[in-house]
Length: 249
Image (cartoon, rainbow, N blue to C red; front, top):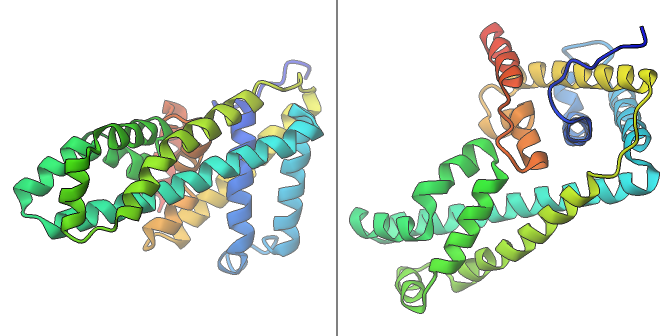
């Protein structure tokens, strides 16, 4: 009994932060989940959020918990805003110029190398690389060319501004993760229970939102974790588990 080990492969702090994001999405969309399982109601969702918050407090302390959640939410918000602005510029360029010119512009800005990984995997490292590439490649001449087609200069400035902002938020988030306490056996059991519950929610969520890719991604554990870890969250164990879930659908 004393050698109880958790079965999830992620760092516990990353797992709990990922749970926090998904649990809030679960509560916001509880009307979609309630018909599936009797216990799934607003009270259950609130209790899940509280349990996860308490588990995070147990691991990193109450003071650090709030700061860590805030830094994670800031990273997530910057990611979403940056991705939206990057999509706008790419769509405009592809619509304003012929294929050859558009391809040249997007290649210079780093889209062809990094954009797919940013959109498909929420990969923070690829987003950081794309933002830096965009900023460093945006010469006055290139800006004039892009804006001549109709893209507003404000979008370009927004993307350039996201690079240092995102890097600072990322560093803050990672620094906060180093503060943690050695968990007790009871705490480890609770961590595992929370992980299992959220994985079950993700499994059902991916079925409920199977025709809505954006919502489905919000309940794809590895993609949500990618926002938290700054890496492609595709550890083999998680990939295998999600693959098995998809096969059951």
